[in-house]
Image (cartoon, rainbow, N blue to C red; front, side, top):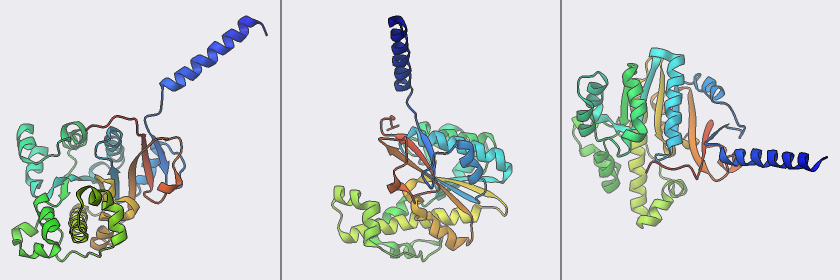
Length: 294
């Protein structure tokens, strides 16, 4: 081969390598066997479930973008049968949320009065606006944080002292709860080390999480129409390994067909590390180098 041809071939290889390096993947999707799948393949499967849980990393833009895309895709399939809900809205703000969705109050008043998360405008607004624009019912599923805070201070038994009006914003009492030290360490271990919580404080923290999970399950069950579909957005810890919300939903609505999605940030997204298998039916995997929203 002539020298000029060798130089041309080497230049072509360098350009190809550079182009590959300049175009890294922003995310990949995997199924529960670790096989990479397409978005349409994932949606085809999710569409067969009655309730879909999308577990997110709260500050990952890829998670939030995929929530929007999943919402659009499932709405395109289910139409008016679809209902949305999310952890980030609290049940006592349902009236405010309904007034905003029905264009009875301005966005400014909604933002001021609905106790929205600080990253609402960057991360949650697109799905809520899509629901508003397409008349999709939207449910505020989470317990008001003041009641979760009361439980983290005084335990689940304190809920019996609240009024009937207060209890309409939480799951029916008593809330079933079994404490497992190992499970709590897995869910809250880092928090415990950072805050130096005592074993009793850890138990009450787990009880507060149980109140949140049970309440989200209760409002999903109450607002899932006959032959309807429900898409719920929550932090991944609330649905990973079919724990958190899901056992309560099966208690309140036995036999519900459920599908789960979780979000991961990994150094290498070319494959799914087997240690994560079992967390969900589908995985949204973004690189750790992808910027966060806060």
